[in-house]
Length: 242
Length: 275
Image (cartoon, rainbow over all chains, first blue to last red; front, side, top):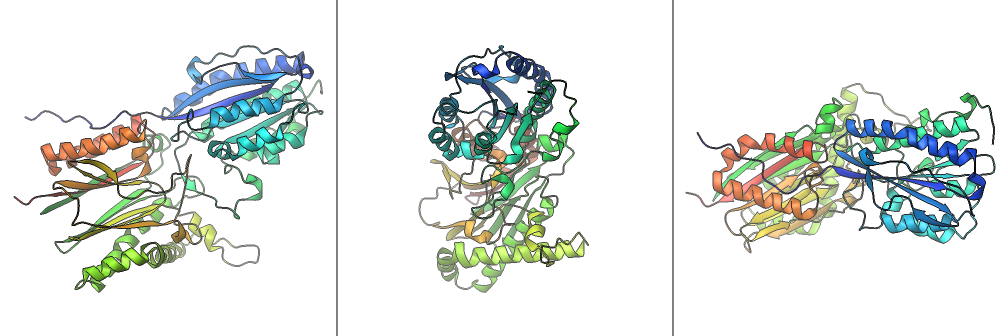
C-alpha cells in the first residue's frame, strides 16, 4: 500500500489582527479617571482572550500607546492577547495627541504591518483637547492604506473631552462613545474591546467606491460593528459624574 | 496533449464553527477536445450578503455560458475570437457577464419570493437585491492557441511549469476583507482580463490554478503561496492528477484550519504530453 501523501505547500498562518489602546495620560486624567481606565482595560483581557480562543484563524495582537507630554509605546512590540499584561498608567503632563498619531502612523505602514492582516482596531481614550498640532499627523494617519481601513473608536471621558477632535479621528460620530462616569467608562471600554472579535471574521464584503460610501462610514472603513449594542449612557447608573 | 481538470471546494474552518455554508462555487466545461472553460467564484459571506452562495453559483454558470457562446460563435475562426477577447475582454465581454449575472440574480430573487427592497421613491431597489448575492468571479478559457483570463474581485489565477510560478493576471490588491464584487453598479469596470498566446513559453507539463482568496490568505506571505503552487505541480507530476484529486479536499480543509479560516476553492487545469 502506498504511503499517504502529506499536504504540500508553504508555511500557514492565521491572519494577524492588531488592536491598539491609545490612552490619554495628561494631567487632567489624574486620579479616578486613569484609575478607572487601568482597571477597566485590565478587566477586558480575559474576555478578549476568550474571544480570540473562539477564532483561532485570527491572531489577536495588542499594543498600548500613551500620550501626555509626548507619546510613547507602553508595549514596544505587538503582543499576543494570551501574553498581554496591562501595566498601570500614570497621568501627568499636556495632551500631545498629534505625537500619538505620528507613532500610530509609523506602525500602520507596510511594513511593519502585513498586507494580509485583518483591519486593525484603534481605540482612543481622551478627556481633553489636544495641546499640539494634531491635524497634520491625523491627516497622514488617515491617508495610509491601513489608516483608511482601520476600525476607529474613541471614548470621550468626561464632559470636557473635545468631541469634534475625536469625531475627526473616527470619521463617524456614532463611534465616539461618551463616558461621563466611572461606570460608563467601564462599559464603553468593554464594548470597544469586543470590536476585535467582530473584525476577526474572514467574510469578505463588497468594496465601497468613492461617492457611494454611507454617511455613517464617514469615508473610512466600512462599519462592521454592531452599533445597536453600544451601551446607552442613559441606562448607566451614575453615582459620580465627571 | 492530455488535459486534466479537477479541483475542490471546502467549507472554511471559521464557517464550520459558525455553521455557515461554503459560499464558493466552481464549474468546468469542456468545449470539444481543444477548449476548456474553468471558473471559480467566492460569495462574500458577510451578513449583508445572505444569498452569496447563490450569487457565486450564478457567477460561475454565467462565465461558462458566456464563454461557451463565444466558442460556438467563433468555432471556425478562433483567431478572430482571440482578437475580439483581446480588444473587448474588459469592456464588452465584462459587460455581458455583469448584465447576465444581475439578470439571473433578479430572476432568482423573484422566483424565490424574497423580499423586494424599495428605494425612497418606492421603486424596486435592484442594487440592494444584488448586494445580497455579492460574489467575486475568476475564469479562464484555455484553447489550443491562447488563454483568456478574467478576474473581478480577489482570488488568484496562476501558471506553473518547470521554470516556476507566474501570476497570469494581477488583480487589485485591496487590504482587509473588502473586494470588488459583481453586485456593484457597473461592476464590469473592475474586471481585469488578459489574453496570452499559448505558442510561446509553455513547457509541458504545465498547469493553471484558480483559487479563491482563502487559499493565498492562509499563507504567511506571497512567496509561501507561490511555493505551494509549485508543490502542487510537483506532486501532480510525480503522482498524477487522480491521486492528488483524492487528497485535495483534505489538504484544503487543513489549509483553511491552519490558515485564515475562509472557504477555499482550487481548480487545476493540468496539461501533459499524451502517452
